[in-house]
Amino acid sequence: MIHSAWMKGFTKRANSCCGFAAWACRPPPRRSNSITPQYIGDLICWTAIGARTTASQTHREMASGLSTPVGFKNGIDGSIDVAVNALTSALQPHHFLGITARGQSAVFHTRGNRYGHIVLRGGRKPNYDVRSVARCERALMAAGLPARIVIDCSHGNSQRDPARQPAVLADVVRQIGAGNRSIAGFMVESNLARGQQAIADDLSRLKPGVSITDACLDWQATARMIKQACKQLRPILAGRKH
Image 1 (tube, rainbow, N blue to C red):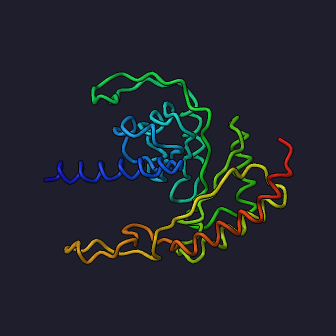
Image 2 (tube, rainbow, N blue to C red; image 1 turned 135 degrees about the vertical axis):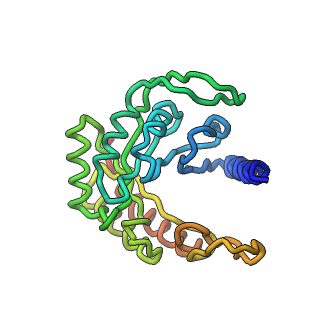
């Protein structure tokens, strides 16, 4: 029963990825499972390592061989040291046991991932502000790493209130407008409908489009904030000299 449920869920996920790919839009998943990346690797454009697994050596090794940029989130307490250490590790070659696309055990030899970056997701307090970003830049440069930062508008930065995500993004856009060059992107937690719901014993009572994990913004609010950010950033980014 468990095996059947897992396969059903994994198949749905793969089919969803195929659907996005058909629209020329590849999804960016969070990698919590280190066994399955080979099965859907062709459909993925970006990878996130969550705050609870950034310290995992297994995930650092996996990240060193992924064919996508990888974002390591800071620790759940807000510490960025664990993410800096993870980036340093993932940058190096590794050798480890894994599963091939044919489902066979093998020893993987990786070259290291040059496209790692940190994801500031907050902790006990938000860390998307100017001072927090500058502190992160200094830590990355001190470790010999490029100052590439993605801001998570949810989690600790929104204090888990989805209604605060637009304000976080607005602050990030202001920083970029003021000349920041280290912020490479941002992420939001969004779903079709706002809020969250618990998984009921009777699954028929679940509301379609409502998150069963973290509370999310609804699609309409997400579209508004993204369009506003795009309107403000387009002339700024177009004027940059790379």
